[in-house]
Length: 415
Ligand code: CAO
Image 1 (tube, rainbow, N blue to C red):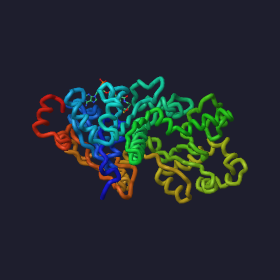
Image 2: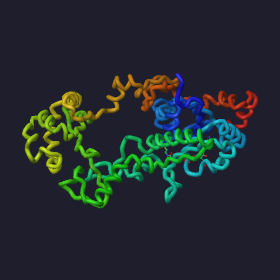
Image 3: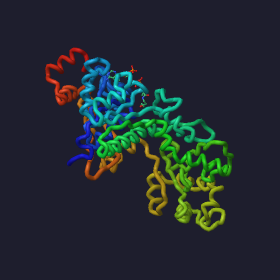
């Protein structure tokens, strides 16, 4: 079956996490992704957090599926010429170097345009234009600068970063959308363009509801769905809301049977208004359904702490899966806190290809997260990440280099 991005060639100049997540998605949609790496070393993640000596790390393998790898020294004059040939052949150049690195290499936007006016140049940077534009940025810096950390955690504790890589993988996702959009516009204009996804902007986009709350707070001085209401006071900025629901339906994380020994024996429970009477029935507090202090969402807000304590008395008598089963029968929105172990073993995620087992020539079998976006006419087959420089000869041949030229470039250290 054909793939959505068949025929699109990507010069993948990305490393670490943010850029590679973007190009991996494009590869899963069918693009030919040619990853350019530094000869001898490659993407730094190949050797980071290794679990098997001298074998590409899971960090690398899980971010670089379905790509080809070529090694080029882009600071060597002959290596630069090979990169120029690639720029002329590709549709998109994706990079996430520190600010200015591509220019220092000699590949300014103007130079790339001269070589290929149809080229789309897509970049992840830590910050957009402004006081921090020259800064190097990693995941947690972006979470802090984009508003996630100040709004995550509990009110009486410090800011907290989240395990979801919203700065890196989140920005890669934003960049991928920018690239396919620019590819679409190019079908009309015939021209390439620059695409920039700044990590601070990507995180802020995902924290949009918190900027909403900032303005609500400034206007009204309070936010009734926050745990600070009515027991605490609000300051000038959106406070950390613990595990409270983001929307108008109050929710919290509650203990389940086994919580004393299992750190993930918890359930997220939402006291959705339309099913309030059913919640009262399940937890054995039927009188709350008609009691004026509990019967309406507004009346419940000052009592949320007590309400969740009462519900927890019930959830603690059930495992998270038993509670889930019972609550679902009544259409009560809830979700078990799943550990990574439970997710890795979940058969339905294997069935949909969201968790995939991949074989690798030096590592053997390992699990990865497959393509989370499913297209009915462009199914994803996850193939292993390339070994360092595995496709150098193949790609050089496609660019028109003869075996003798390839060998000479290798001797010169250009590839
Ligand atoms: N041949 C020769 N040189 C190469 C090369 C190749 N194939 N590929 C890269 N290089 C060079 C670059 O030209 C650059 O050289 P100069 O500094 O002399 O210009 C150098 O390698 C290193 O690039 P870098 O500065 O990007 O790498 P770093 O490890 O110092 O920084 C990071 C890493 C992530 C902090 C930085 O790249 C960055 O801020 N990127 C943008 C934001 C981003 O994507 N962050 C998320 C990373 S995932 O957590």
